[in-house]
Image (tube, rainbow, N blue to C red; front, side, top):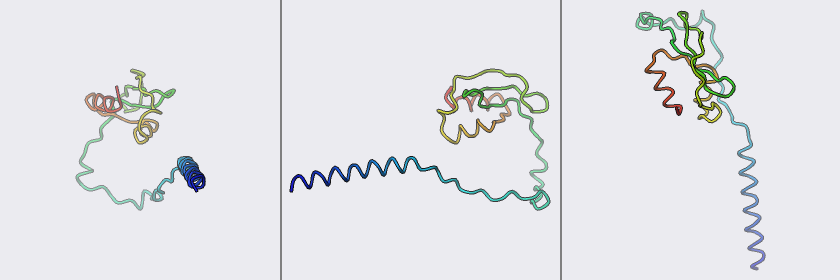
Length: 122
């Protein structure tokens, strides 16, 4: 009887480990985003949104060779000069932060840049 209980215990442990590994190996299911609308179908901006001035980015953060890189932007808001390659590995960041950096992140002030870099770990 004791051997049977021990075998059942080992079988249960093996099943639990195998199921856990299988569950971790499953690809993550992404929620589908709604289809993009045509520009003609989009809702017009409110008066308050229309009154806001366009801000141009001063800095641009991106993934370059696996590291977070900071670029200074020109007058048009496009990345122009490479300022620094930080010691922050993008793949080690939380998933949402890594995705934002890989897509490119525009920063509009030096204070915001310092805050973002501080949050990311520098």
